[in-house]
Length: 88
Image 1 (cartoon, rainbow, N blue to C red):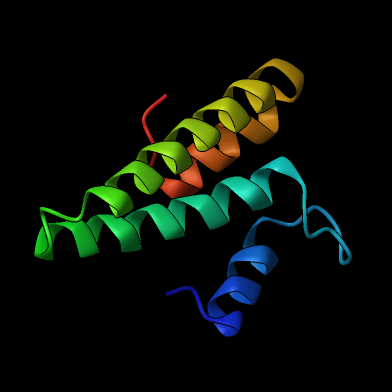
Image 2: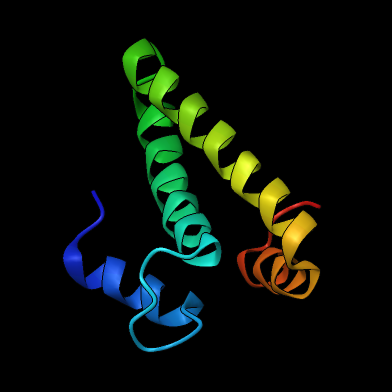
């Protein structure tokens, strides 16, 4: 589960300015953390199909946000992909 402290740290890493909490890079960072935690859960509980569906929905949302970011701000897209270790 993503605690408030973890969430604040991720927001600080990816925010463009001090009050930025909802920009695409911030959302992508938060989704990536949630995806990694849920993937760990599914390795322990492979028959949890409800969580698997949630994971697939989060992966799709992150992909849409990455597509949007690549079209509108290529520099920010490259930085986010590099920082999070995602495939292009």
